[in-house]
Image 1: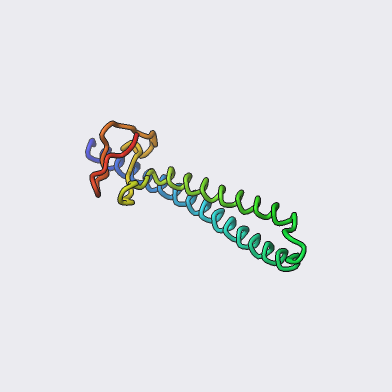
Image 2: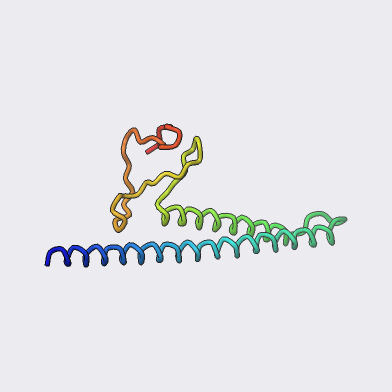
Length: 131
C-alpha cells in the first residue's frame, strides 16, 4: 500500500510542478506581449516625432515632441519593469561578468524566496556574485 501511495504522491507532485511551470510560462508570455506593445508604441512615437519635426523644421522644435518623448520614456520603463518581472518569474539572474543565467531562488519551487548567501560564485566563470 505504501508503494502505491508513494507513486500517487509523486504523480501529484509532478502534476503540480507542471501546473506551476505552465502558470509561469503564461505570465512570461503576457509580459512579453506587453513588451511588444510598448515597442510598437515607441516606434509610433518616433514616426510622429519625425513627421512633426519635418513639418515644423523651419519653426524649430514643436511642443508635441516633448509629449512624445515622455511617452517613449514611459514605454521604455515599462519594458524594463516587464523584463525584471520575467526575470523574477523565471527565478534567474545573469552574471555581470559572463552573462550566464544564475538560479537565485529557493530550491523549493513553491517557495520562491530569494536566497542571499555570502561567497556565491557564478558556476560558469567563478566570479563572486553580489548579495
